[in-house]
Image (cartoon, rainbow over all chains, first blue to last red; front, side):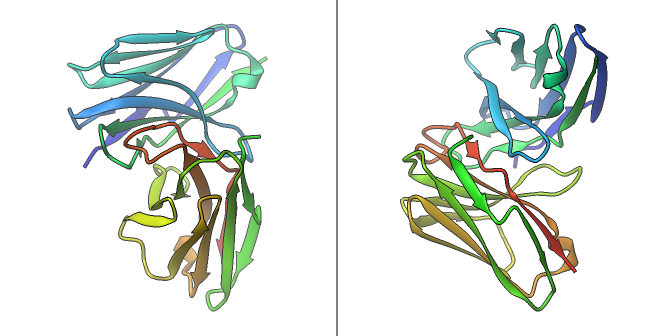
Length: 112
Length: 115
């Protein structure tokens, strides 16, 4: 099955700086890569996703890049704000499968 | 508010108790899921239901018993649990099965402690 590795496990940045979280996957048939944000006391919420037919997608201050050859994808958050503090999960799924394979999460702390 | 509501938010139970977790989605979705979230581990898919039919059971012990009476409600019945079953149990829904539409909407979870 798929194996998704995520780094770092914790990340602290100053407000206004950028944050980057990286994930690698093992199954070359995976073609869908979402990112979820989990705030304290809440369930994960989808913040951005990318499919294997594109290399980059951007939505305001967040962007995701995908390198299919290297089998890794990254989340980039620019101009970080305290409300960006949360645990972020990457995931991967192959076409037709019912299961998302998640990474172990990155706890991001934005220091005011 | 994600449109997926889970109750209770917290549950403490002994190993011999029987309890149930409830999930309700107000999104008109046809697929519902149970996930287990343990510290420092990836989310683990437990069960998948599509239009009230179970389509996936990821080798979950029989002490966990799911029930989906309709497409808006999902239950997880618990009995004779072990301390290692302590975790956050998350319910999620999607418009259709993941293969067709991948966006999952999660509830806030039930934090379960087994003593």
